[in-house]
Length: 203
Image (cartoon, rainbow, N blue to C red; front, side):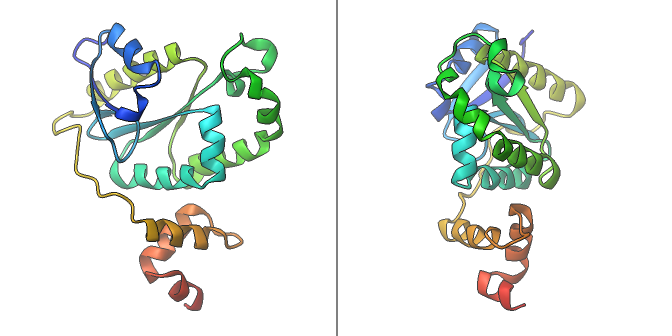
């Protein structure tokens, strides 16, 4: 199933079960401190993996949309995997997991989650793939790696030099994104054109 599949994994994913599961499935894995994405399966495709709790925290601190901007800026075919049974089915449909204790808060925050995922899909045009467990996530990563290998050339290095996001730039994006009717993608375009929030506001 994973013969010939090579996947570069962000070092911060070592604490998850995914690397071990990928290796058991026959994938060739290597670790690197990735600037963009958690898993790179081809020069065109980087994948961001989020558990439900990480998804929620990344929505609140604005990290999600910055990550989406980085994904589309550096990879033509990025993906986001959302891992957790709460998005796939209700509590009666899933067995006890480490995140079950958070289900009530997830239910309360579901409008926020759905709004954020809609923005990811529509504003950034990044496909979102839900997976209920780490086992399914691992199999999905290998399926995606196999698909991109068949559909597109895999020539070129999986790792590339990517310049880290400027903290000042992140703050400027946050200022513009707080304006009514301005989303993250619009803020990126405005900042690119006018250079600073002040010039943007006075334009």
